[in-house]
Image (spheres, rainbow, N blue to C red):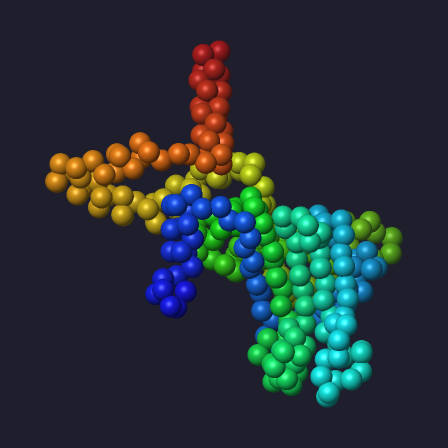
Length: 257
């Protein structure tokens, strides 16, 4: 956000502080060197070599003339949608270079971006993705964690079950080895509290300590007033319930010893 002289992390934290609702958030991975072969990925979807949580995909080429220099329909840009466009999460992969050719007349070989992989999120999944972004400040980890959780492309091997088919080399290069996965559901994970504490200690604690010291020295109660008037969100209540349930289970186990 150059015009406002603040980062996206600061903007998102401000939105979260104001209890904003994230209705739509898009994360984009730009392929600058032509690493992704979109037509090949479309072909692999049709051959059931796409292993995904999603149940549907759509693929098409641009319906209009690309340019006076590109009359052959075989050279029109390809687009692949993985997942339903009506759902809260789906992927859009397309040949960005062809889009720039149509819009600006930029020759394919001069395009800065060859392909683009867009992660389109809505509602709770958008909210959870933003939470991961501001917690870790690592957009690569967030984006590829989502991709790796929801889709992978494999090569069919006769005599083996689909789950055993190896990763396609091109996809393995794109996704990177040993990527973690990121679930975008609201169910609390065992590490959720620890991740929240880590985010708090790095992003909130210094400011909170400063405000508490100001209150202490000035005889004010700004921090207490803010906390008293802050409403917890559903995910915060779930974390509390999870932690208190764990503590209660430990107490009962000790009582039974």
